[in-house]
Length: 92
Image 1 (cartoon, one colour):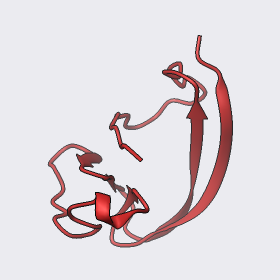
Image 2 (cartoon, helix red, strand yellow; image 1 turned 120 degrees about the horizontal axis):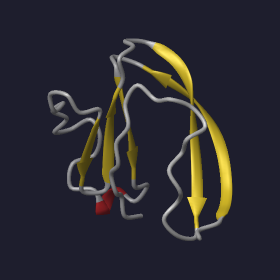
Image 3 (tube, helix red, strand yellow; image 1 turned 60 degrees about the vertical axis):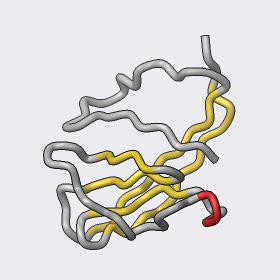
């Protein structure tokens, strides 16, 4: 069973209903955020090379992004009932 290695919370300001998680080495990202951003109908995660675009139902607001590092595939998070769930991979 996978074990949690670390967890960190980041305050996040959402503007215009979107944000992205992106590799910090922009040479590894063919289209740095927000270039090429095209929301997919019905999906709140869009996987791209070197980044993941995230759509929000709220236009402008603050939230907390909870990041976890696991030593394997994490278990399903059943702490709360989510309105939406999705999975995407990013190589960093």
